[in-house]
Image 1 (cartoon, protein in one colour):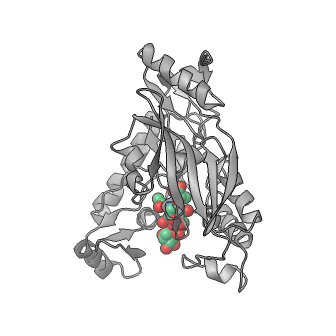
Image 2 (cartoon, protein in one colour; image 1 turned 180 degrees about the vertical axis):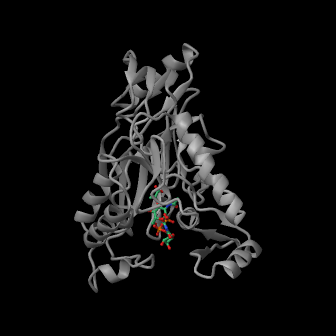
Length: 337
Ligand code: EPU
């Protein structure tokens, strides 16, 4: 016997998204087991309800009303398994990402220390392939367990099957709306593998840093630049860093020799959206209930009383300004539910 789904009705989600956009879910459930999750998925399907998955709410743009059903998986178990060349961490989708990173770093395990202080649940991490300070989830992920929304069966996807790219994965494409991420398998190392090439990270750590020291320095850097959602509502980077052709990058560099740019394996260049917005004089700019963060122009902040439509208009205005000045298109990073 599977448990009966437990739906709460008309649930206020304004505190469940870090941008604090006003949002009400017609039905909401937070299942703690695979069986309870399967019961919710089946019930929503049988009732013909559209189903929305919510994690930590740190990378979503919620509408005022979410009809259908919203599920926040609370699969909060994780454990370690010794492996021939390291340690595998099996992590439930509901585990808080930052707590996991710190717990692994305290055990002197290597692999995710550069990804400290990224907000959100582990289940959301593969969707956008979270990345920071020279490391992406794809670098350590071994596989993802998913539940089918059609028949609630569980299966494991290999890392290759996840088709990871920069802030991109199969979960935003072919599998969008088809599966629910239930568990991650992360391949960690006991041998030190510091990745210190990004920005000034190397100059902030000791000669032979522990993974915990690196995680702590990454937290320091993030706290300097990025607003704490508990103090000032935001969803981290609001735009992706755009990829431009080598020709376009050369053209931009002729005009702006100091423009930050990063060569990609495919010959294109990634340019810093924060720098582009900053150069347009928009850092710290206020647009009604929203604004461009004063320390990092890639982050939009919400001062209260705004909604998603207004935020999308502000984003459009910023993108239009950048397009007119640099001829580069910006793409929004958080997911519109
Ligand atoms: N810059 C400016 N002005 C700004 C912001 C940035 O000139 O207002 C310049 C910086 O000086 C630097 C370059 O742009 O030369 C890149 O800036 P930064 O190192 O702060 O990183 P980012 O490209 O703006 C990305 C990720 C962040 C991640 C950092 C560190 C995306 C969309 N964002 O930001 O991820 O923490 O690199 O790796 O790729 C997130 O996704 O929510 C997020 C915070």
